[in-house]
Amino acid sequence: MNPFDTHEIHNQVAPFGNVNLFRCDPALCEAVAREGDAGAGDGLAALGEMLGRAEILDLARQANRHSPQLHNFDRNGQRIDEIEFHPAWHALMKMLIEYGAHASPWDGREAGGQVLRAARYILFGQLENGSQCPVTMTYASVPALKQSPALAERWLPKILSREYDPRPLPMERKRGVLIGMGMTEKQGGSDVRSNTSFAEAVSAAEAERVFGEQGEQVYRIVGHKWFFSAPQCDAHLVLAQTEHGGSAGLSCFLLPRFLPDGSHNQIRVQRLKDKLGNRSNASSEVEFTGAYGWLLGKPGRGIPTILEMGSHTRLDCVLGSTGIMRAALTQALHHARQRRAFGKPLAEQPLMRNVLADLALESEAATVFAMRLARCFDHADDPAEAMLARILTPAGKYWICKRGPGFGAEAMEVLGGGGYVEDGPLARLYREFPVNSIWEGSGNVMCLDVLRAFSRSPDGAIALAAELGLAGASNAVYGAFCSALLAELAGLAGTARPAGTSGSPVAGAERAAETGAGLGAAVTPGEVLNKAADAEFGARLLAERIVLAVQAGLLLRHAPAYVSSAFVASRLAREPGGAYGRLSPDTDCAAILARALQV
Image 1 (cartoon, rainbow, N blue to C red):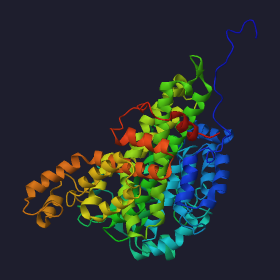
Image 2: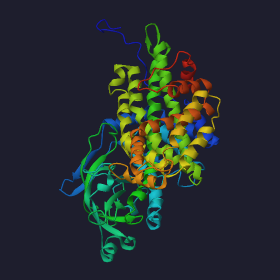
Image 3: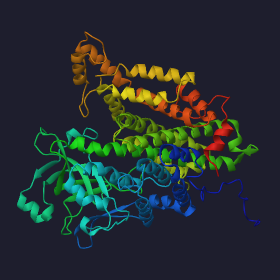
Image 4: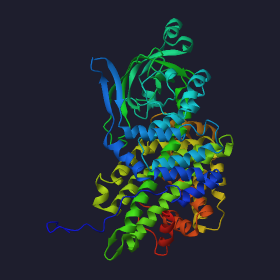
């Protein structure tokens, strides 16, 4: 030691890295074999090894430290609206596209495509999250585009390509394309029915002049979008009115970034958003000054068209939050196992073991739920599985994404001040959590959607009861919890207002009063209205209980008893609470932590 050195550095933890992100996660390995293909493990292990390398993990730091820059004009004053990204961004995108994170369920290369993609997506979610945004939108655009066969025929081959091609060119000259979306406007936010952007059909001669043989159902759009995700994408799905006053309802359009002659479409990027997180990716505000676009789906049916996309983007919110949870957990566990305090490793201190084991339970429960939900999407032709997806997608997006920020804060606290600074990944991971709750429908929107699913058909409660019943009756707490939940669901028929309406749930109340659905005989609209208002008031708690019940059932069936019993005791026997480290003294924390990170 140099005589002028003030101290010797010791008891510091080496960065987490050079770990196989798949092999170290037994819950994910087991879920892949159970929900999808037992033979897929080797391929996922190869991906997990690559993503866990120190130099690959560092790409996330670089891409977020050097955020995208908007260049509205070139040196000669020509408008170009180009986005400049750091090379790390392009490296991340290349990996995602080459591994089919945007395409694998659609291109027919593998059975169980949704489950295997979900596993890959959870692994990529532990690396970097901004790059997942355009990949999610591209993946989710496929069901929507299939509603217009002519557009699908032209665009899907490029969308499903495994080549990442970021060049700013017309679609026809590219090897692969990405799709974005722009729904919300300044005045409405989630209330997209208040959108004012207006689309007007162009003449056949103008459409042919601009698009040639592709000039069918072409419109020009004037308006704006307050959040226009990933403006670097090659086309965007947007909603616009086709009649003044909105009497016809919103329609959906596909707007290309470039026209066939190489000129820019009239989509003017006003600025990039200065966001809390997701800083590697570009989000923007745009104006349409006569932008050309093709009608997608039927006129006035834009919201149903875009909902084909929305269910898949919401699935990815669940998967993304699951991946970030796992990343935060591994960082915390890695640190606690090596850092010593008061004479022994942090991970051996009793209260820290409680906190870490509680975090591990939350992460494993999110993983088993996410993978089970992905299997629902693989079997969408099965009515029971489709109905289960209809319920669990919004419920899971609400609860799992809502648990994220508190989870991230707790994991950060394990590292103390070292977790709070930007030198390590936990500060970035913490800032990534909130977007999955906000994007594609906030928590309240998701919970009202859960109510809507149950109110319209008894099939939702039937499908959920069948899923919960698979865990049997061996755990009395679980059985009582599920019985109370299903009894509550039995009274929901007819109580939710229609999607996209505002104000009180009068319409649902009037329908229920007319039919007496789920409410017994001789009810008045006022009584139904009160019941509907009560259902809305408690919708968050209902969504929470649904997810907890499904998670508990999956863990009871598939996880070791020391995991499932601790989860039931800490989440079903009492309210889960807002903090971690509330496990009972009889919890086998040592076994839970040994399972949580196997390196």
